[in-house]
Amino acid sequence: MVAEIVAIGTELLMGQIVNTDAQYLSRRLQSLGISVYYHTTVGDNPQRLRDTLSLALSRSDIVVTTGGLGPTQDDLSKETAAALMGLPMVYDEASWRAIQDYFGKIGRVCPLTNRKQALFPAGSTILPNACGTAPGCMIERDGKTVIQLPGPPHEMADMFERQVYPRLAARMGGCIASRYVRIYGMGESQVAQLCADYIEGSSDGVTVAPYCQTGECQLRVSSKADSEHEALSRIAPVVDAICARLGESVYAVTDTSEGSMEEAAGHALTERGLTVATAESCTGGLVAARLVNYPGISAALGEAHVTYANEAKIKYCGVKPETLQKYGAVSEQTAREMAEGLRARSGADIAVATTGIAGPGGGTKDKPVGLVYVACASAQGTQAVRLTLHGDRQRVRELAALRALDMVRRAAVASGK
Image (cartoon, one colour):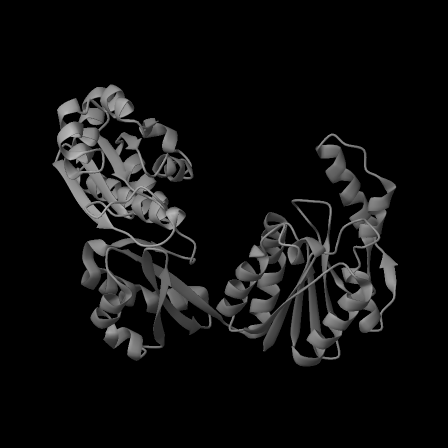
């Protein structure tokens, strides 16, 4: 089966929001063995929307739309699909009551304009919205299927997982399951070389494919079977073998391509009951901010400091003035003293520090833009690394923060707790 994803909304075309719905839907459709050939974005214009849906229906078996299900006059997703498929719009009382109940739960009066959201193409399967006011629907006619979902990502994902995915899985008679091996500290070419036997050929119906991300890479391990359980049972030994081969460079194995180093670091800390403190110069609080993305990090992150000025490094981290004078703020010696001093003063199990030149200015011949030192102090001692990073200011900061988080993760794992 071939699918097309049509994102509806002028705000998408204007760049006001990012279309994360298409990424999510492509991944989930692929897991069912449904090929996505096209992504299309169209504004809230009746004629352009009609032309877009007409083209999508002419070349795809399944058309998934997001957005255009609101109560205003320019929300025409259902009406346009119904017209193209020769279906009248009909009113659903149960949907109208659900919309009114939702407004009651959030303490607001339901406007009458929202009654428009209770109109559906005749004969369609109504998909109630547990997270908002806009129900979706599935229309099946003449061998074509149109699945209409709300635009807000949390509403769309909840509706798809609960109501659409099971229906499509039953239709496809099987599924593709995947696991993602997330790798840091080893380049893509080295990973490909070490895992060439898995990447170049399938093993027992299991395929392995490499992907790159900023500062890291991952291997997607997939298998198709009659059930998810069967597919995962085929994948498991391959994932285990890859992890054994790549060793400590593997920082997580996830069931989606969405995973992060801060999750791995946060989990390593909280699972072992460890605390951490941060002192950041060039990263400007990015390490702490990424740790805060992890739910429950309050149990581990006691304090965080942005120590741009030398005086701040002295005051909060206990860096010696003579160290700064002799070696400079951007040096291994300073990074070490920042981490060790903060750990001693905060009482944290682990302290991590960053200092460097993120650019675009401030570099010299001896200390160019992109030079960063990261140090991590723990009961096992202090480790410091020298990084020579390339790219704009934001990329340098992101890569430095990634290394800092990995050092925290490794220190937590090495604690033995």
